[in-house]
Length: 154
Image (cartoon, rainbow, N blue to C red; front, top):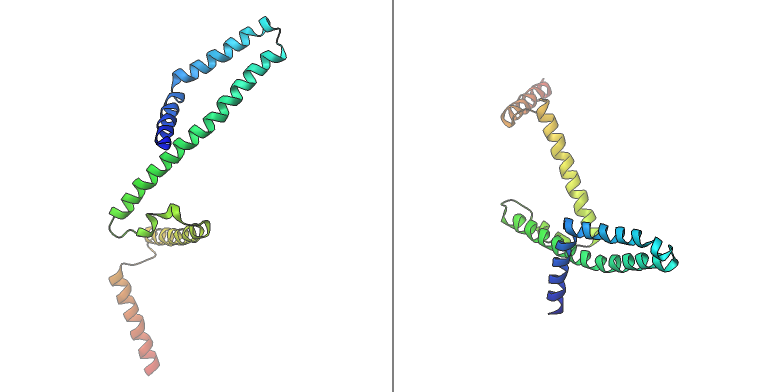
């Protein structure tokens, strides 16, 4: 119950604090503070008001923003998991990848990097005509083997 209320409050606060009106309100507070400086002779108390206010707001916003970011990250992970699970030929081990340890993530990263490099190399060779279609390549191997077997017989 508390979690749901906090989540709802955090989401509403994040929406509100990201709105241009919230920014204009913050600018107005700073302007009022600056204008009031001469009234308070730029005293230590006058400075302490803005310092304390900004510290409290920043401290509380950290928790609200973190909650909202955690929700957004989980939502994105769930959407990506659904896409991975729905695709034919996809490796389902990636659907719950966020639950792996750092070491397991590093291993998967290395595996993906190697596969990516292999794919990039293959595409580059195809673009530059260095590979032949499978049938021609197989025919070429057969000719080469035939020539080698003739040489061995001679």
